[in-house]
Length: 184
Image (spheres, rainbow, N blue to C red):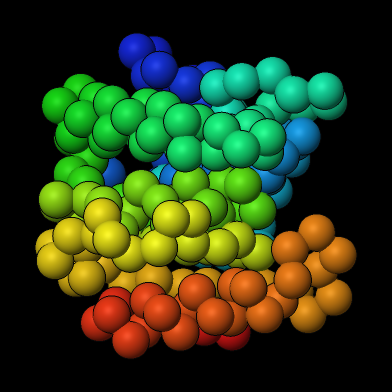
């Protein structure tokens, strides 16, 4: 595992066995760091796909954050989205990984960022994965092209930070808007 030089976020890249496989981008939650997810490949597809672990851009009391929780969420989400757009552009231009082979996933704040970014994409992603997240700002800025991107959402029933019902409601909104949704 090694970082990809030139990306605007601290990162670690774990390449697949084959060059033409897809890429799973993994983003952590509030107060965490990318290192917490380094064991993900052992639970998922192993070396059949590549993994890019990203660290949030801003320091938090403990760990890192993708955006503030003090009413300035949208400012931070827009910043994170722009950073991800730069990541996508670099991956395509320098690493030969097109956007349509990238699954953008995250946990908690990382899930919110993945949904926020994914539904605004002009070029569809291979997928969006949102684990214990929600859809910030609704669907008013979603693109028709992004509806070609499959979305996987899941949420813990006993989550004491974000209610299950919020995530479930947002999953229904995505489905009703025409997204190919897998909700569990």
